[in-house]
Image 1 (cartoon, helix red, strand yellow):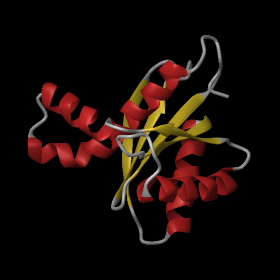
Image 2: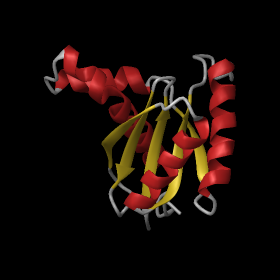
Image 3: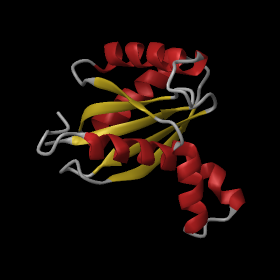
Image 4: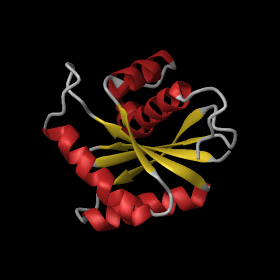
Length: 145
């Protein structure tokens, strides 16, 4: 099995989450601040994947509530394609991320994290929600790759 890296692509920050080695549990890991250089941001994601030994990178796909691809989803698809080229041979997969930020904020509130501290944690927490959803939807016994 191997670890999976979850990636929540934001316009200002990129949230990262990592699975345990068995590919069962996702945890928030870190947040990258966008540099303004897309290639440098992709390189930072690839470096993070290498650091944790990820065998797959799961990128959030921000679909609209209807499930259709809007501008954000099209941008995420393009960014994931560029990331796949940079991360080769580590595969990059897309996973629906609707409601992940909302769910992460709710979880942080429930954990007693004050609102002012949530901003620093929300992106990585959203990446963990996204990654956990992907891990949970894999067929039983299917490795993380």
